Length: 165
Image (tube, rainbow, N blue to C red; front, side, top):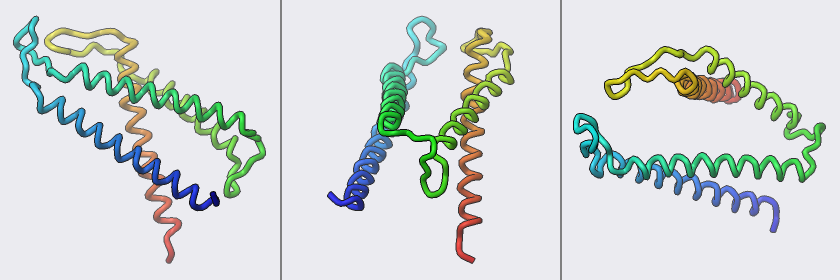
């Protein structure tokens, strides 16, 4: 099989997987909000216990586990296929770029964890004050926002600096 047709085949598979994941995610979230969402909690009827909570949590855990497994698999395959330090793709040193992204992500996660608020919050009428999980949640929210903003800036810069004048 020639290289260009193989690439098109890989792109079709990736596109199909992406569309399938979006469809399944939309169905899971729709089911969560549309199927018995206002069911009273058996221990305290003042609170809701949506019927599809377990399905949503299971789906999130499955996606996370699959992402972790695929990440480890791709790192393993890349290292076995000769991940040479001097290898360049379009003039960019691939290994140094990968190391830089890894270090930047580690620094971002560490910084947002340390800067996260340990203040107790009110959850379901009670104060929740577990510092580790409060900082961890704050880390994920803040890091996600920083990464989304970074991606948006990168797309805007790419558009502005590579378009034809």
